[in-house]
Length: 164
Image (cartoon, rainbow, N blue to C red; front, side, top):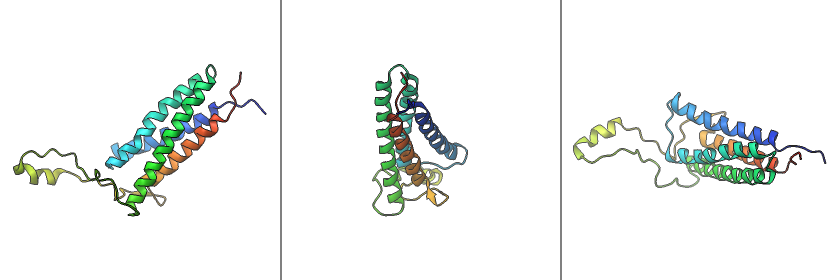
């Protein structure tokens, strides 16, 4: 067997994760697409897996077993993220109900006299309506693709031998 490094495949996974989370932030900050509570929850695995992958890449030459363990944890996180995406996409397609917490505006209404003004200025974002499509998939669907691909690449990278 040739002596292949885990680093190239893990680097591709890292780039996929960075592109996915960067795109989500871009649609939010530049495009004005507000995420729902479930959208925000789907970002958490990226926030954990990206630093874990970076540390694993740095440690790979000196501590290959620790690097593999970190990549496995990152892969598990991304698999969880893919599962969240499937759940979210299914809620969008009405295959099952979305979470009860979706649709919360986060508005703080303590005075009934300001309720009408609050309702006029608050944008309700629900988990059961997709905010847009690209090439036939909603953002939740694209998260399934990106998170699944990242998880598979991270798992594949663990199978690569680290040069001694």
